[in-house]
Image (tube, rainbow, N blue to C red; front, side):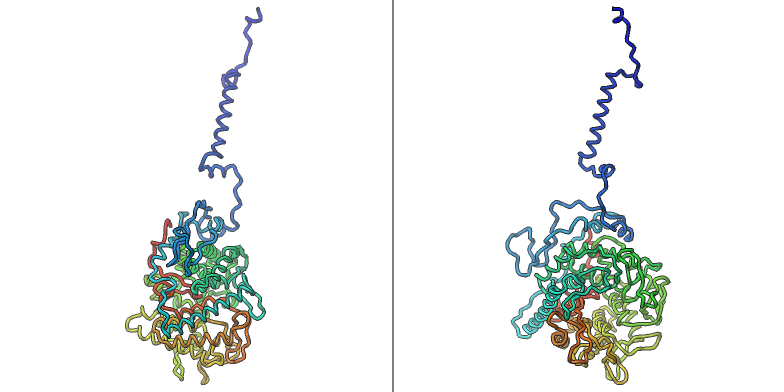
Length: 622
């Protein structure tokens, strides 16, 4: 009894709680902690909190480096919508979602598989990280003509002949493609004599140059099966994780130009995504004190260098850094990333500021000092496409890029004053200029200039328009003579005007023909401007010569001497033969509204890029 009356001593807890109370408190606290941790993983929209506790996913290799070069943070991988919107149909093609009946003959099959989310990561956002999309349907609605033109009544005999010739050129393209597919699919070029593929060293490890270069030609000629083969290869096998040294110029005009045009023609996202990603890989070339890019970029290290032969590796080449403007503006248009446009606008700024000898643009410029390295001027190799891109920048801008227009006509006036000559036989040609001394020759590459001058004649001063049209015709006639005066009726790489010989090569090293397009390019432009039938006749002569001297059992090949009627083939089917030569010949025998010059300009690899009839309505959220 006494023991029951003595109180038991219970020490007080640190919180002043007795044990039963402490147990209840701890039970409550553990429940609260459990509830909080559960919320991190079970509640919606908790992905940011999960990253505090979960190991991050492996990111795409090199993505941070690409974004850093481009001046933007790495784009986050977007969430894929459950039902991605299909690409806009081509003109005359029914929306696949609105009908189940079989497609008409001209309908192009749509995307067979979506672009992967990982691949789209770097192009899902524009400047400032804002979501970006390109309204393809709005773009197509602004075109003034059907992409493939209209079909006229072909029952009339003259039109029937034109159609037959066009079909022959289409057959040549089909043969060139099938030969490439059979012997060299995935390689950069076909070697038809040895029946194998060739990679070369210009593309930094990129493959399939012939495929990319052929996409728009296959589409234009309505070779649907072949186009789908090319598209499938791009989707499945065209990889950008390469590590070699690449030519900035060649990758831009062939690969990026080819992918851009394929997207604008079809709306297929795979072409847009890969064009933008490849454009990002070229940006390190611009890392110079002046912003003038060097000619070679290393895809692995991001380093750059000039060509070793270009003034002992110290110079960039006018035609190379001057032939980026069209493609890079469209990369900005399709990505919302202003870095592409800024790079080429800076090139324009440097060229406007620098002193030009007699108003001429020399071919070699130091990307370090911004000074000309040698006063060698040429409208052929090393200089050619710079001038072409000036007038085409004016046209592509829907005639708003006044700076490009002024630069073009100023340059053309200087060329006329210092380089233009007429031979004793009456042939007009553009010589090369070396510090005031003229080389009286033209390269085959310079023969694009007839078409260029014709293209720009309409927007010249009124008193100069007829003069420029005549000048274009005369230069094109001279280039035709370089073909007509050879045994094969194909033109040499270079031809001279001296020692009583005119429009002919003077040595074997200049007598070769490598399937070049420049002469037929001028035929096409002069035909569209004048409709003089002589240009179609001259073009058909080229078709017949190609068939006779360049066609082999396994593709087309260049020849080593145009003055020999027994061809000695060089064993290479150049990518530009499919991209340019056959395309320009096909357009020469087509109606003017097929890839109408009101809607399209051609880059220097003949890839059609649209005129920007609206500089903002095609963008959304950028």
